[in-house]
Length: 126
Image (spheres, rainbow, N blue to C red):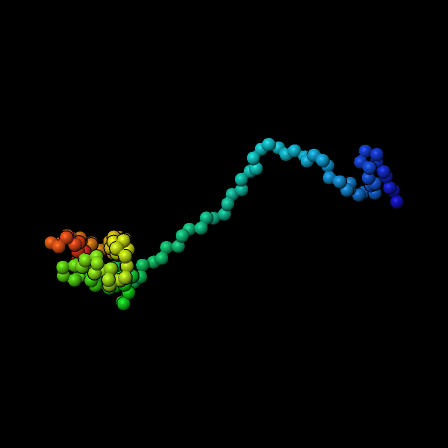
């Protein structure tokens, strides 16, 4: 077996074996930014199809949305306090439902008028 002792490192090397210590200084790499790889296809959001027989909304029988629509279609409309009692929602939730769901999603025209008592009444034409 060929064994060789070097004075500089103070270690023994066998023929064909690597030194046991790592060098003190790492090799320097080029000061160039790594190349960017192309990413795969990006995910797209899935759009749900509108349900048949419904005009933009989904007010099923017995739901709070169906109750609100029924109250809005009454002659003379309904006040926000009546809607709050019927649904259990807070005032900002009732207003948000009227503008967002009924007005924008269902595409119905919500009319608002202030009565003699000072309370606002909402209605939708059937």
